[in-house]
Length: 434
Length: 151
Image (cartoon, rainbow over all chains, first blue to last red; front, top):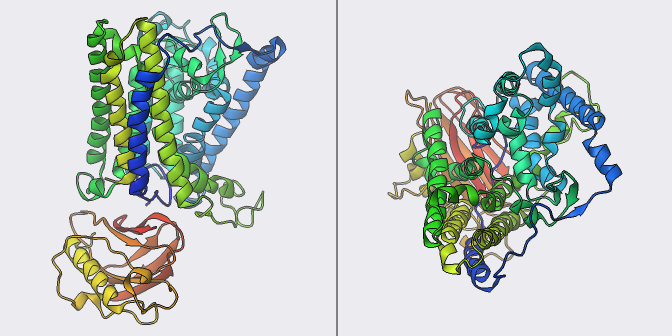
């Protein structure tokens, strides 16, 4: 049994050098005040209608039903293949394709893919294809009217379940766990989509919501009139539609990644998490999410109070400004996993069912090269991601404050900025290992 | 099944002491058996073994070596021993395992295994060439004996 912190993997990162941690912390604090005091004083980034439209022909192709159904069919075949390999392949995690595809290639790979190409999982989501086939069998989506009020809360719930599986469930890396999870997840999602209609997937499929959220920092957007546009990723993030549960979704991502970092520290391993059981893990995960959420709500409400804005809407209003910070955490914690242990997927793909003598792509005999990315580069990427996420987050919050009140004072933004600084210093602390 | 935490801490600390005394002796002259050394009372479970630090008389910086002695015992409470053993990349690491149970030791990342047999001492020596933090684990029991930090 492999009992590493996250789903699968053979290694974890070294603590970042103390100098990196300190310079990073200093840079984050300095950048925060530079943005508050020196940056633009009127809204500067484009809104939901900004951007350079793509050629109409290209949009027709990308939005066309044929392309989408085709891609969804391919994704469905791949998913079915992974489930089959998880069930019928070698029983050992290190030789079974399933866990590596789910926890590394798919879950972590979805981040760079969405950042570069936009909301890819919405386009290729195989559950949408299955839903189209199953839809005629049931009543006509009786719950569809309730979906807008639920917003992204169901997705936040679905992702909490997944991160619990990934980070806490003791048998998480067993191939059979992966197969049961994928089948169970599909069944539950399809049943709910039957009730709520196709709109469910944007609201309740955690992976689709995750991909769409990350894609908010990609250059690909959709204008108010439906045109696909290329635009400044910062403007794209500002155009994130306000939905119930958006803040919750971001907090689940931020809190769970923080918890993943926490479980790698000596403090956790020898202290609260020394039992390494599901109880300490569950409590730790939920407390981590609750802690970042409480800090965030406190910061946004205090900022709203200073600016004499209605406090209740503040957490939802600023939710999109924390996406870059959550993304920074994600990159910092999973970059090396994708680059190093992610090689396993491509090795095992040569012989997914562990048959004797099979080596489809000639990679089966390869070993994972754990030195492919140097420890220095990993540390640089980690600190760089955290600091970049922080700076972008502070810029977005600054713009959001100016949009909310044209004459917003810099001092009004201070509580939220301080909370962001806390997130960033906490993130660096976790990388340093305290 | 578990290793006794206190014993691990003592032996690792003692190994560090022995290593420091041995200087840059390298892999050919392993330090005296650490288990018989008196306890230093230290609760630190990590240590560093680098000849560059420990050996002033070294003509050219040779690789350091580290020898850690561990007890592997069965226990009713699966309380995990999670000491962290720090070495420099390139160091030679020797794990000396006094096992009271049959199990298989697995060093993750390096993907090394050693069969442990009840009542026997097993040694596993390897060069720590891959940077990172790696778990050293008992396969059957699923217990993490320690984390090896190679930097």
